[in-house]
Length: 191
Image (cartoon, rainbow, N blue to C red):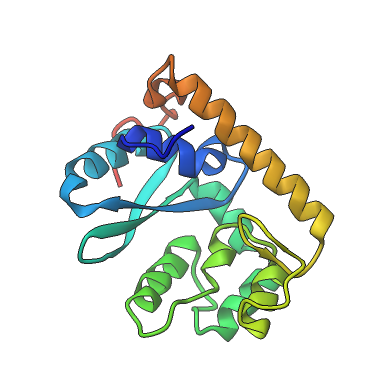
């Protein structure tokens, strides 16, 4: 698939694993000039149990996070992930929303918060390795830089790629929002 030109295409291409619920979260950027689409999709996705959250607005583009709250909560609840986040100054109390609030604050700072990989479901050893080695001396570079289990990472990369390819193929015949049904009890919710 060529680089997606529509918001729906960008969501499918960059966020398929999190939309499908097999990854904690995905990031992508979108032009600020098209913010109306982001707001509309945020409400439509929320009714389907999927969150679309602006993390940082730059001069031209906004950094967006797509996630399923329960999936992100499970990911961030891992003791090793929590320990790494606490070391980086995140609150020890509160759930995913409290951690996301701190991430937004960190994104406004001078240095990029590489612990963002923990929110995206990257293995803690890979996030820790990236920070320790400053992005060098990795075993494999794919969706992220791998410092731990290379074979497991390759399998995950392939799974995510297959998910993206399948969702993008399906998008050619079906609108994205029709692929995900509203979640009972969230029909009126629009974070």
